[in-house]
Image (tube, rainbow over all chains, first blue to last red; front, side):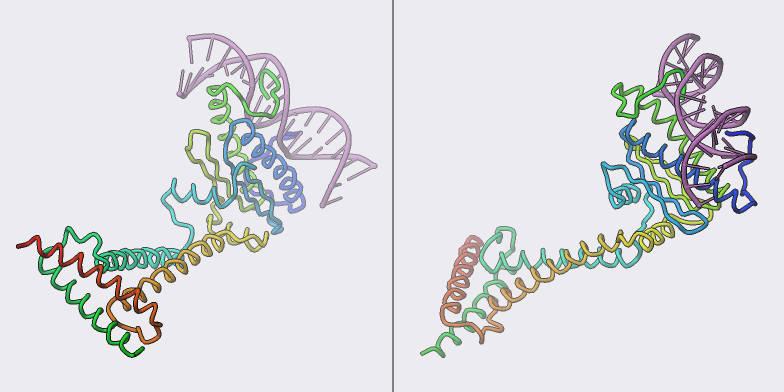
Length: 143
Length: 143
DNA sequence: TCTCCTATGTATAAGCG
DNA sequence: TCGCTTATACATAGGAG
């Protein structure tokens, strides 16, 4: 495009390269906007030039984080590193702990105990009697 | 470009939109490759079409994670740290839930009740008696 | 570097099979 | 829904200020 055809390979002349970068950067940003408007596409475009300056375009309908979330789901690749996996694991662990405590609490309150067998009911009764005697002992101190 | 000029606004005819998407997607991917080769640029381009299919281009000299790291440094915005914060908050919430259940469980077992006042002990006793009668009721069914 | 210019190469809208 | 064609609009290389 332009006065002469060019090969697609690194432009050796650095000022030429910079000029071309600047022009094409504008071009591609424009294309990104156009496709997202014309076709309802979610686009995330991030460019770093050789000089280190950044340029970006994210479709107005979304955020980079949304795009990256979709990216992870679509590609199966994981971006957030091991640190995040650890946090997720911790959350799973806590949720399980929560659930089992929830169940134990309900049992101690006499709820959801239809599924328990006789032995389990005995153990529950013991625990409750134990608790009760402890509580009554403490109560007695108030007199 | 093409037989007729078009306005840059959402293409209402959906099959037309899909065709245009497909063509322009190829075009922009090509441009992304070209600028990264010609100008030594680091490019990250992620596109989701309305159909949900993903297309991406990442400069061969880099990785998406590198680009995102640079993005965070250059823009000052946080990406996975935001995600990280969400996870941390979730963990805090679960831990608090856990702790209060832990305490309730201990109380029901007659532990750590020295700090309770008389009224609280009464409530605890009621709860335990309630639980106990529920359990005994169920136990009775076995005979 | 940036803007403007403009000849040319490319991308693509519309159509056809 | 594709692939192919082609006329046309657009992007841009090279150059000048």
